[in-house]
Length: 355
Image: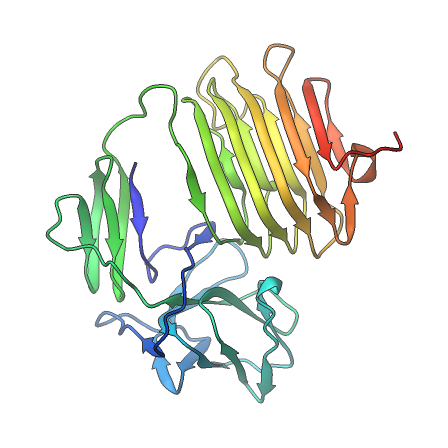
């Protein structure tokens, strides 16, 4: 399968931001990357790491933008200073699991990092015009530009139009690289499995759904989403499998997920006819596990499971250690579950012994 290996900044901002974390090195190191010539900086923020300027990019987004983002690599500890062009009355560093309490002086927010992480800085109790900060581990095992299995983008601006890549190709973006265009697979899915054993961690979902959604014309199996923070979700659902075509989604796992702010649905497993579907027949959803999923903020969202009909069901779904704030959920009646007649073998662990 194709892999996107490393790193922002990119010219496009997806509906979700996805990076992988790594180990902290023993020797303190700080690496920053200059922007390509002519790239305009964000008008909202300036960032320094250990007193060294870090270029801040601007990204147009669907809601609450523009957003800004910056990145650097480090090991050891790093002192971060974020200066806003707007007045700052308060600042919050997300995700909450990072446990960072910044200090604010005039328009500057300061905090220390002792491990890599992907963070969002929000001002004045709002989510508009945020700063996404990618404090990555120092890179190791960089792919070689001359490797025939690597599509390598070095520093600079790359206008690629539509570029196709074959299976087992690593798509690599070096620090300071901007890629504008579309990168897509050069071949159609073949056989029973479109995706196997993909692990994304951690992921910050700004809006939309984390999961397998729509246009499911091929079977999708053995997919794992682990160690994810959903900081805001303004879309249909935070964790989802949507089947609007004839494929089957199976062996789908969500593990160690923290939901901070969900407006509509926390979970949606849905089979039906939708605007993104192409096939006349519907598929199936089987074997979905939600383990150690916690709602840690916001209101009480819905948890929806909807099968299409008696022959196209949602089946074999397990919620293990599902927590709404400090409460463990052991039955559908203990939260806002909406489950239709075409769902079978829905289980909770630990079980409710009082039923």
